[in-house]
Length: 351
View 1 (cartoon, helix red, strand yellow):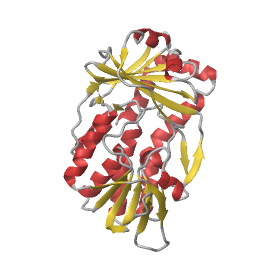
View 2 (view 1 turned 30 degrees about the horizontal axis):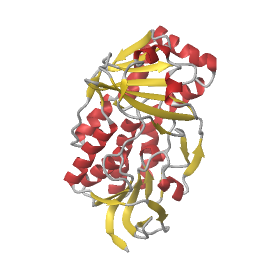
View 3 (view 1 turned 90 degrees about the vertical axis):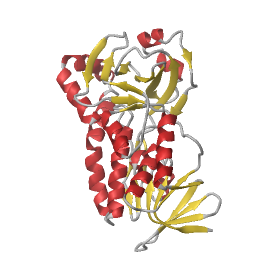
View 4 (view 1 turned 45 degrees about the vertical axis):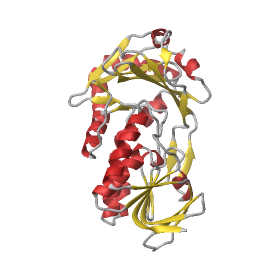
């Protein structure tokens, strides 16, 4: 059975998919959102929303509550503070991913997004056709004028449209939450010889700990590479179990093919190192909807390149450089010696 045709089909009901669906409705399009999971969707991520992300959510009419943070701090394994940058304007917000998802889902329902629980198994496109069909695992199909693939790191839409170019496979992320009063008004980024740990205030009584590093290490093993942080967390009660994600790097040949546009992590992902994936995802969702609403999908690739340029260049450079042990050891001392450079980089990623 084929559902009636919609203007826009959004595949993936995470935060970026919900934001894209909301953008579609605000642009006057009929929107059908397809997601196999029900209820708030969780994800292993740092959960720190940069000031630009907070502003973008506000513009969508999404109300969020969490713990504000004022900047980013780099910390050496010993616990020595190397560099701190406070945002020039605005504040970030630490928000549990489930709470963010619930707020976006509420707003999507309020603006009239129609949701269907199902798993996409195929995309049927025909050159020159004015529509595209999305095939679900129950044998049904949904037809739409355009498809936005917002289905994350392991995007089915990316694979089915032939836009995937593989994955690096070296870096993974793991996240847990601890019952602890935040000890800082910034997001702390702890560096070690093997990876990074992000400490994000989530509420007055909870912090999130996300670690990034090589395939195969456990959360406890990862935490052990940050001695000062491990000592601080030695006696805490963990409020969630370890949740992982990866491999982080995903490559695409293009973010668009015909009437299918890729948005967020589905459109290619470098790494979570700079913590701005959601900000970019929201900006690209807005750009993608603008392009399909005007019937100009050819405008999306240059828009996507412009919106993601700083993230791709800076993050790729950091990931590549820190694969060299000496460069990884020097990064925190260099940030301490060049605070203006460190601050400028943070500001470009925060806006």
